[in-house]
Length: 292
Length: 323
Image 1 (cartoon, rainbow over the protein chains, first blue to last red):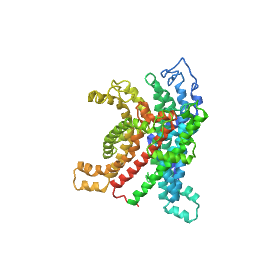
Image 2: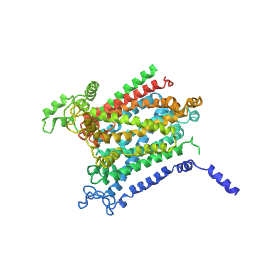
Image 3: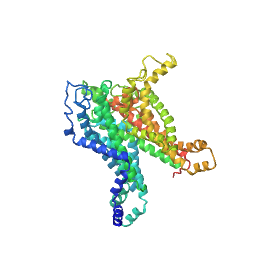
Image 4: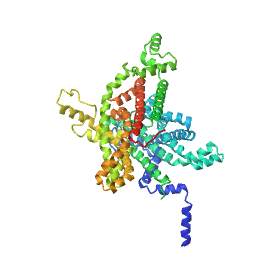
């Protein structure tokens, strides 16, 4: 009995950081539900060719604008394409744009923010003025302008969304670095002769991972929203369709075929919501001040 | 403080200059020769050369930039490649519609969000707080255009007297018909876009107000006010609310760019004849002069808005000392 107790204690002492985060994350029930939902959507996206019952491009003039039925789960559009297949394939585009754009934005934001915060002075001045410039453009106009200029490919859309989304994170990381720079352990590392690279990567960056991870999670949702907005305006990815593209195709048939717009819209909403809840759960789980 | 303001003004000028350089670069990266657009297909080489010369497109890029920037500084954004009209005129024509929509949206947002946020904070963890924060969280994830289309389908198409496209009925004008007839007409058009904008904008302000109020009611001076036996109502209105509202005041600076271009997608859905609709049309037509004017005006307004916010902070919170 005593041994068991001891073992338990030992186990708790040996809990790794990841285990602690997971234990605390699990307490946020909505975040866990969101995680399950996202895993499901991701599997659908990966297995799209096996799940979709029809070719997403195949038209069928005998079944146009049909309501959801056993044959066509989500109904059909104006030229008789199966909406279930289109939405399943759409999850690929929407999710991959979300992930890649968020990754681009996190990389750029972290790099610029940490350089500005670490070196300070003139480097900081130049980088922050640049950040303010990018931040000042109304995001939607900037997105639309660049989209109008570059070729509309999946890759370009990912880049454009990612490259307009980083200023917030850059400012956040810079702020963290400015205060971390004054910490004793950073000074100690410097006194021991650690290189800039080692100080930045081993000591400072590791200590602002929490806000970066949370920002990245929320960023995926925001990028999915941005992509769907572009597609909705008819400036997004058309083939293969994204959720926003499918939604947009239902605009003209709102009165008699509202399901074309409702289903992809609901999916965008739920997916973004899931990323936001997970971000929320991670924020609580990663916060070292909340000792529970 | 004077030094801080001077430095802030300097930064603002640098940022605005940078914005014009970025804009100009983007404009030059744009595919398609503007001469093609201006001259048309049937132009002879001489005519093309003439147009090129007329628009200064044959000069070095630096000269072109300075020529362009000195014009922009005087409010001359050039002429539309498509309609040939001055860009500034086109924008000024559309400005009132956008201002009306965003102004009323802002009024509704603040009138509702401040009391909701305040009540949320005063009754933290109550069912009211729970519902308010949950709704705000949901709205943040909702695509505004989807919400707009749902409203069109469930309300606009079913409820008699609510319009889903445009801004006014042709022939119904102020001063011609009675005030109420015109008012009812305008209201029937603005209701749906206004609902979408107000709903979407409220979540942020509510959260902000809730946080600000929560921050204030845990301060020592509130405890002092209660301890000296002030009635709770007075503690809240005289002591807590006034201090909690201060950070909200500074948000006004950030509303400036929103007033100008906060409703691009919503305007296209409801065919609201404002700036957003103009911008989207211009992008589809590759009317770069119009597009660039939008970018610059929007960016400059954001910069000025941020500056105003910072200055308001100085006025509102005398404890802040800048070096």
